[in-house]
Length: 298
Image (cartoon, rainbow, N blue to C red; front, side, top):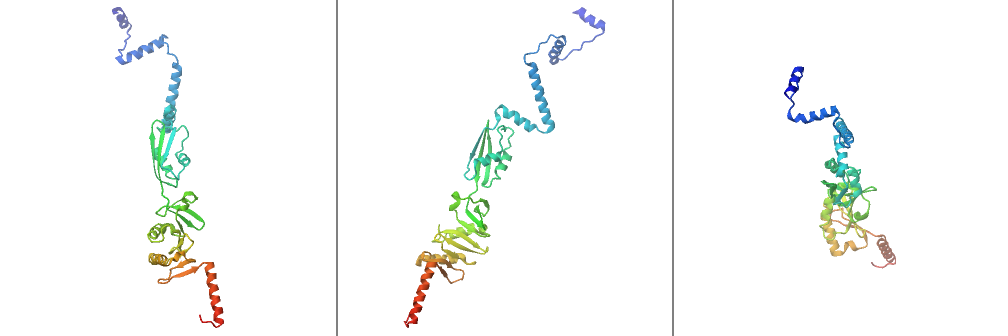
């Protein structure tokens, strides 16, 4: 040992003393240089895979696609969204919800943006509110609060379902909404809800009105279930309605053979007869006229 160190000094070569943590890698590099190191099985394959992985990560970082890289990797190791649970929907179809979510079979739970999904689902006409929640490892929970239909609004030939505040929800397509009250005319969607609530408090009108007709956006006509139309004044509509209710209770006004009850003139009431009633009335007048001609006292 002393002789070896002397030979180093004699030759002028100085061997550096490495820190402890670098000695093992240095010995490995020395063995590689001498050809005495054997690589483990599949080392080349592993090194190639590592190279590709590092290259992909570097490219993702440089190109700003790191989120997409993470999503692709995590979806293929067991974090792809496999189940979607939709709750609270009656009017909204699950197919529409899934289309708004935009899953492709490999969408990763890790990179999925629930805020963006909520915004897309909220664009559906019937959705009032929605929550989207991740349930790891592979389930998406979607809870929907739907808008409440109040009436059907007709303007011209267009029919739409509206909320209690008059806002349009969606076009009317029949089905379960056919039993809703109908409001007709310009402005009926906005003024209808409050007016309907007032009418339903008047005796004799509960569940009898089939249509609330807004005339020139100034006053209302009511179409009853037997086809009778009650024409209300622009001012004092509820007072007129109360009077009509009293007349119906005392004289059966709405059950008579009439088509219209006109209350637009304050303190007066006009009725329109049905065709059969008008014909019968005309026949009575003609008979009375014949009797007068014959000298009968009437």
